[in-house]
Each structure stands twice: as structure tokens, then as C-alpha cells.
Length: 539
Image 1 (cartoon, helix red, strand yellow):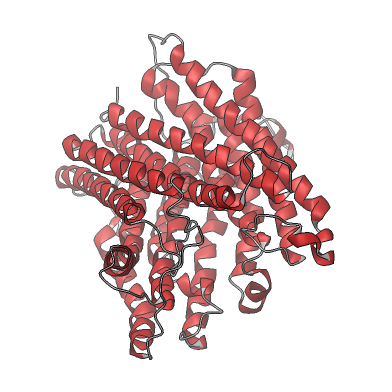
Image 2: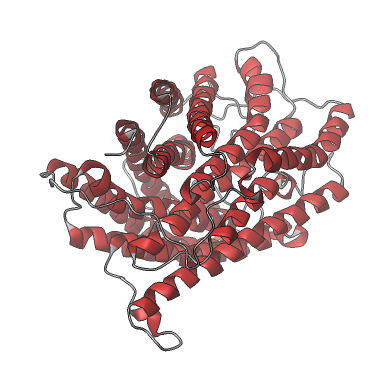
């Protein structure tokens, strides 16, 4: 039994519940956008569901799952999780925050969408809840750091296990990213929502949001990469392509994940083109570790295929365990992420961004990235983790195997059509794609039906995952739990701590890069004449 098992499962089940609620909201939106007749369909319910889906899926599901993965990784690799009391405090604070924010959204008083851009104004409980969720995650960060430091004090010259390396990097990215969010929420939105100030500056708030908003992507992705690098190669009988290269990849995410936010603000006034160009360059720089990851993980897959007897150029693909739901989830997640990655490069380009910004292209893009690369990896990992952590074997194997394939099919139908309709000019976050019967909207009507079918298939896949998990834990435990084994590198490593294990150094370099990227632009914004806005609540 690994240390912190109960903490892993507590965080895991909150993530599962959030995912289930978000999935219900998602299918409602997909059908509404295709103008399907629903008994409860209305503009208010639609935008409440958009807010709830975004917050529950993108913030709550991911944060709790990543906290579970962190406890799992350190507990299994280091055989310890220090200060578990603080781990439980983290869980309770995050849970209370989640409940408050969810109630505020479902009450209809906080329809501010996932980005909660001002002047859209939410009920104070929404901001208080979101703050508590982040504070709870910071306490989790402290537990992770404390556990690592205690281990390091007793193992000064050893290289930290690779899974722990990835999770420490995740913690660093989260702390650097949420610094911007804290300024926005605590310094601007909370006083505004409590009525202590009358107006808020939307551009300054957006700048601090995107300080946080894009690095958030890597807070999701790096833990998925931890699974891709340190779990899946061993699970399929292969080897990790390179231990050292993986550490370089993780550190590059620390350096380049944060100074990228202005590529979300190409159209915003008050930020000069030179600073937008700098953030474009760093955005393209952050593509590099993802390209290396694609190469390394596919190489690990090829090694597994060749160890199973493949000798041809591509026959190693056929001998991979496609009937294993864990492998199928990760492999299909990688395929969709490759498509989403190319879309991301387009989003970061100044001219192309202008064309696709605020169209359905964007929702298609992030459903391929976080909605599949991350979510499908996490779902697949749960099939592998559950028996090893609890002793409950995965039951309903046929449904478990069908789940990643249905997710892939549903996401292709949903996301590819969203990309196409986005190029055709269809806005995102619209209640009815018919636009009151306009001729332009008629050109994309059939595609919104295909997109809605994809949404229904995704909902079926979500239900399969939940049913498999619930039926599995209602069955009997096995006395012998499968072993937890991390991937062994193709070439053995020395085991000594090196340059890429110096987290303090790389965090300091990342902080300097953030200072360079944001200090002058924010000072410039604050020096401009203020055009603050009063609050706006659509419902």
C-alpha cells in the first residue's frame, strides 16, 4: 500500500463527480446549439451550463485529479507523503471552495463563463469559492514541496525519480501561474463584487487572467506527460526513450509556460505590438517540448512493439495492446493532441488568430487539447491506478475498452466540425447557431448537427467511464494488487542529481522571464488613462 492512499482516492472521487456534472452540462449545450427541442432549453440555462461546464471540467476536475496524481506519484516513488494533515486541510478547503462556486453558478447569479471576464460580474460566493479552490491547491503544493525537500535532505546526491520530477515541475508551474490570478481575484474582483469599489478595468483584469490562463494549460498537460513518460512505457512492456531528455522537457515547461499570455490579447488595446510579438515567440518556444514529447513517447511505443517481435518499418504499431483501455486512451489522446497542437500554432499567429478568435474554432481546439489529451489520459490512467491502489479490478472490460474509442469518435465529430464552422465565421458560446434564420448561419446548420451528434457520443463515453468505475468499486477486492512499476529508461542513467534537478535555479530563471514579459506592459497599462467599467449581469 502506498502512502497517502486515502488522500489520492478522496481527491479522485471529487474529480469524478465534477466530471459527471460537467458532462451533463456539455450534452445540453451541444444539443441546444443545433437548435434541438429540449424541455428545459432557454438562454439563461444555456449560459449557466456553459459556465458550470467550463468551471467544473476545466478547473475542478483537472485540479482534483492532478492533486490525486501528485499524492499517487510521490507516495509510490518516494514511499512517503509528508504532512498528510495538511493534505486533508487542502482537500477540505478545495472542496468547500468548489461547493460554494458551484452553488453560485447553479443559482444563476454567476453566469460569467469560464474566463469570468469583467465587466461580467458574479455573486461574491463565486469569487470566494474560486479563491478557496486555489488556496486549497496551494496547500497541496506545500505538501508536495515539503515531501520532496524531506526526501532531498536524505538523498542529496541522487536524481529525483522522474515521476516526482514531473510533479514538482507541475507545482512550480501552478504557483507561478496562479500569482497572476491571485492579483486579479483578490485585488480586483473580490472588492468589486463586495461593492467596495464601483468599477473595474477590464483590460488590466484580462492581462492578469491570461498571466494565469495559458500556463493553466501546462498545469493540465505536464501531469498527463508524467503518465505518458513514466507509466505507459512500462505498462505496455516497453522502455522510456530517454530519462535525461524527459527532465529537459519538464524544465522547458517551467521556463516558457508563463510568458505567453498576450497571444490571447492580440486585439486588446493598450498593449504594444512589440510585447505581443515577444509573447508570440515564447508561445512558439513552448511548442518545442511538446514536439520532443511526441517523438519520445512514440519512440517508447516503437521499443515496446519491437520487444514484442516487430521487425518491419511500421508493424510495431499493430502489435501494441490496442485492446488495453489504458493504452488505447493514451494513444488516442496523443493523436488528438497532435491535431490540437497544429491548431494551437495557428492560434498563436498574429494574423491567423484574428480570423479564428472568438469563433467555434477555439472550442474545437481546446476540446482536442485539454478535453482529450488531458481528460482521456486521466480516464485511461484511472483504469490502471484503481486496481493498484484499492485492490478493485476493473470490471465491465468491454465497456472500459469501448470508452476511449467512443470518446475519440465523439471528439472528432465535435471538434473537427467546430474548427470548420469557426473558419466559416460561426461565433463560439452562442445559444442558437441559427442566428434568427440568417443566410450565413444556414451554411453551417448541418455541421452543428454533426457536432451535436459528437456531443451525444461524448456523453455516452462519459457515462461508460462512470459506470465502469462505480461497478468496479462495488465488486470484490482481490487479495493481490498489481505492482506499481515506473518506466525504465532505454539507456540506464547514473542516478546522480544533475543540472535539470535544480528546481530552485530554474524557478528563479522562470521568474525573471515573467518579470521581463509582464513588468513593463502592466506598468504601461496602469499609467494610461483609466476607463473602468460598471458591472454587467445578463440574467
